[in-house]
Image (cartoon, rainbow, N blue to C red; front, side, top):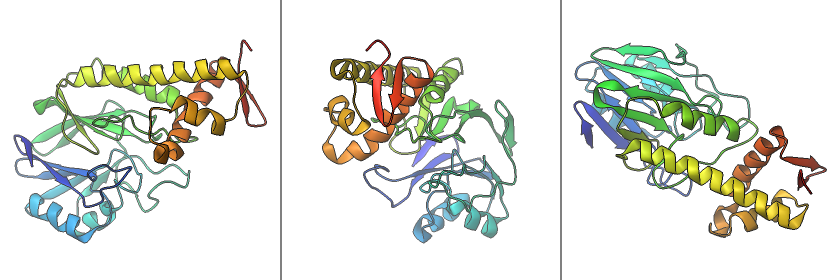
Length: 269
């Protein structure tokens, strides 16, 4: 699917509860081409990327190294000779440990990729090595799993960090972009409204958590999850529990809750 002047999206065949319709791979460049988030190691997806690349793939970017985003990078680089750009995987057991970048993008660095240029923005939170890329000529921001269509991304502690996540949302707001190209789902217009709403949702969830904890005076994460996420289907609570834990860790660092032996208390209780 064409998204602009020499920008295409290819959706991997890995649809599911946590991947939505599948991982989005983006290809851009008028002559020399860049692949962003090559996705899972899947032969049909690889063939689709190679077709879109028209034998001119020179760079591979990754937004982060969860296993639905980067595993195909190694094979694609071997076939094309492309330079791999991204941050190395954290050691939390949830990453694609096969990912070895040739180049690490610095925060705020302009990457000149043939006839295209993107700005790398380090946006830790969902994972510590998350990077968004701004394609300035299109005012298009590639966000990986930092901002998704229609859902709030799961924050996966200990590598995922809720305080860092909210700070990373704030960091994006001054930048000049109009659309968001997420790691899963469709491109979103009115990008700043999307980010504002996402940030408000996280604060709403945090406030709800504090209210429920105050009512109970003391509770475990297992007790809190169905109460704080009573508006979310129960089959998703295993993931909601992780994000709730990330909120609690943030509140603990801020001195707003305490924890002992797995039980959490609001500071005023």
